Length: 228
Image (cartoon, rainbow, N blue to C red):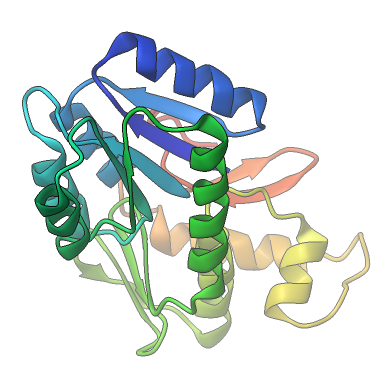
């Protein structure tokens, strides 16, 4: 599970990063609101822990910026226990709210609850970087350009996007897209991946679909622009 912590207080940020890493999370840290907005919009996280009092852009501005494009679960943190702040955060799109000081175990429990709830929802709009997928309309765009996909290519893209950031083996992809377990030497998945990659990555500078040798494939935004 991948978590973004947006917290400017070094002691708190380091404590949360260390504690969540020990719990098995993959953790990124942003030290101000603008960096938090950039990371939240450019990369994909299972949940965001967002402080209210931040330099460059406060938590409410950061929340608003993220909600223009993504519905990533967000827990807001504040040292102020005023009801108005909590109500404002929830009204503007926060999923949960914790007042400092808080119990680390309570934060972990709330993270688990939010991610379970989010995965249980059948979202109809998926975003991976500048890739946008409308599951209901069965259409996809990248950088606002419509992608011309066959039915199977769209199903393959949707399967990868629903589990973006997770490496999927050829067997798993075959089960998700075709509903069968292909023989290990079958190249059906490889051919489909090659065709899909040509359409979603070919015309664009930054690749989203990556091959992990010996393991499978993953759809995700990477900081490196090199193709894989």
